[in-house]
Image (cartoon, rainbow, N blue to C red; front, side, top):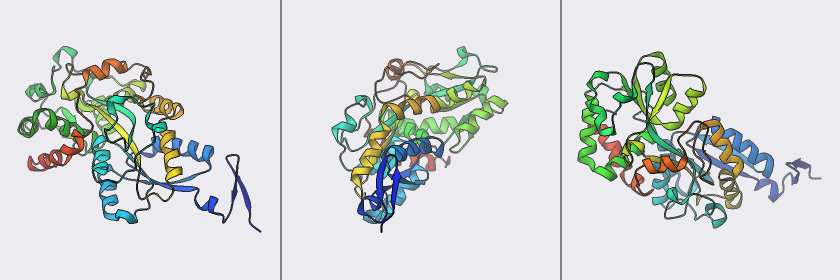
Length: 331
């Protein structure tokens, strides 16, 4: 006699095809802090088990390419447009239904419609309000290398996906030569590389080890909640230093359970999940763009400051950005 389990209000028959199909595998470039709560809510509501494999975007993209059609992954949740675009260009996503894509702000939707943004972030300059005056800060990220008085006192995160997407955006807008020169000019200031840890960089600003750092806006909001004297500086409107970037999620063609995988993706753009992302990580929601996390620049203003670069431009230039980092001896 088969055993009967009750999960999230639904009957699950052990050994039945229903029970066997009630699981999916998520490859996530996002950290557990943001993933686990959403996964747990989804499992409770749907009765579908989600197995999560965590890693950096680049690692997971390489893994998916290596696994090919044998991959056990059903869903990929990336930390950057670059990673999502690379997999999309590989033809690894299925096209999403309009029930998923319809509520999402058009500004950051890929033309293919094969994946969907989950949150929006904007590049900014974090600075110590105790040691730096706002009047000292540059109007453009291209003016940052001229700030010789802060030699050895500037931080960046060269291996972080959003930083590399920012460089890809710089190449798209200004070309490889100007991007290379910016990196070489910045290198002369002996900036401190915090690898992929923007958190450590914020701590370094608080502790007085550095005075400023290039980061995503929400890291500043998070430490501000803790009372850190760290403020946000946006560059002039349209400057690449304000690049808007998205996290994203898509259903993989390798999925053995695409219906369940699509339900998880739909959960990501639900009001419930979007409010969670905003409340916990201070990221901008991708639906109903009237939302604004407390203390942050209104969505409409942040979009106006950000340069208009298509979602496809970042993955196209990501490998060029990584190559420049290696050629300039920064990675």
